[in-house]
Length: 533
Ligand code: GLU
Image (tube, rainbow, N blue to C red; front, top):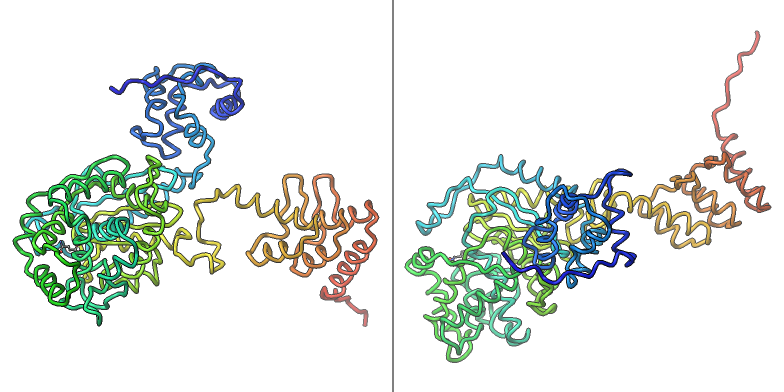
């Protein structure tokens, strides 16, 4: 067991520790127990082996679960160098504040997609054809390092073409954009991933198809021995995955190599066109490419790798910068346009998330600034993408505002999990009231345009119109009334906006509200009076 790091000297006078401690009690008088703290970390999405919280989690887990904690003993279990992370984790200062609620939606979608049983496993090599086609797993990691995994999450699978964006990114980090793109294009090919074809400049179309991936492999430390190149790329994967090293499937590697006529043909074709850097060793380049395709990971590792991309190249679990942000930007752009074989355009259009799939049924999704998702399900559709993976992606963007252009559309059925529901609605009503009180017409217009409920009241029953009336903001009141807000809402003291305007002697608003009330009355259908004949 890992040694426990020196823990913080108990100092409950530190305001934040005292606040955290108070936030842990569920009912007044209920003691805070060690297991409650462990549960809170789990609910927030922090696995037991999170390196940022390792000692603190160990301290709480080693305590008897029912140990009643005082503020002092709570503080005493927090490791000194993990304090800021503990504060973030327990105060919910995380990209997905309600991680449990979010996880329930993800779990429901994951289970719905399990019913998809169409498609075939890849059969070009026996090692892939033999995989249990029912295997199914999902991993998710946010840019705050909150993690979730479902299904066969302990199983290792072959990364196959999901190594392509990584090889591109690593090559890009070793050289600049122009140097790399002197050898590989950045256009979708519109043809099959292993088509014997180059672009008009005699270069592979992009790094996400075989020719481009072979080219990127040739750019990764070409002058060093092959063994060192392999160690180097494994180290990169390990850093991207938050410290967990991938494994290697030698049988897959050997059969990849034995059935690689097309990849050899592509390499010779590129050499004929002088596409490679001078002195490229073709055999070693291909060997290195097959080795990269034959690495194996589990979905938890792959999700952290995708989250590192979502986080601009900084691994969220270790806070280590692994890739330059420029590199990640370019890599995601290519994944967006070219990552899903012959389905890339359709996927970008309907799902709108940078992604890369592989023939093993692997799929990696990157929701920039939010999270990375890894799915593994071996049955493939006609384009070579995981059937369940594509189906899950489609469901994901119907539930969450994750499509790159989702915010162009006012669709209230889409959830933005980065904002909690309570905060979202409270914020909108708070902003409305503040904008009305200050007569900030442009902010009011923005809120109305984004669909804020303009009649919504705060805890005291005060609405934006009450505030405008009180503060004499006649234009704001006019705008709110024009947009159809309620005219006579009562606050918790029983006052309407008209009452407020009269009390504060805002006579122009009194006149406005009276004329509106009159207009309303005049517009109301007249009651039919029975006439005596
Ligand atoms: N190893 C495979 C090949 O080069 C990768 C296929 C893929 O996942 O697209 O043929």
